[in-house]
Length: 201
Ligand code: IMP
Image (cartoon, rainbow, N blue to C red; front, side):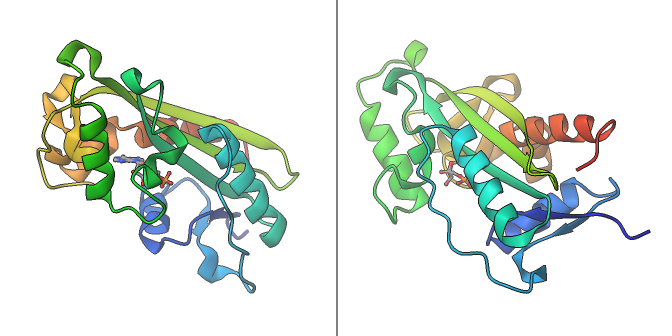
């Protein structure tokens, strides 16, 4: 019997490839939009929470493909900014902001904030939209502190300023393999993998 297909709701081939690797050997064929016969209309992330965005994205992709879909939404919530940038993490410094611009904006907003108050949390919410339209959520969080200057060259987004105390390094100073063991995304995926042990997509 062919393996059931799981569609990753992303137009970024790198992200699809990463999920394919992380979900290897679990009895599913991981596919991206290139495997579909028609294009998925663009989806605007307008939700007020990671969960809302992931749910809406999974439902949208499922409605246009008929396949079970895994969608994610993630971002950084900074304690002293009341959870900002949150769902606006990718566009903190403007609609087409680069990672460097977003990091610069964050450091500027935290200029007067001293160390014990520089705590922050990375969030990742995965939403699975199953064949019967039902939704299941898997969440992962990772606590850290925002440095005053970037350190490290690996990763993306806010990684150079996100200091992770258990490993005494920023996420940008970790190898991709190490980050994939401890990150918010890794923890959400772990919850998904545990769920797959006794459920079907
Ligand atoms: P998305 O979930 O792919 O839309 O990511 C939203 C934004 O959150 C990214 O553009 C980054 O700015 C930030 N972000 C999410 N996960 C990470 C991470 O692991 N490292 C650094 N930044 C992240």
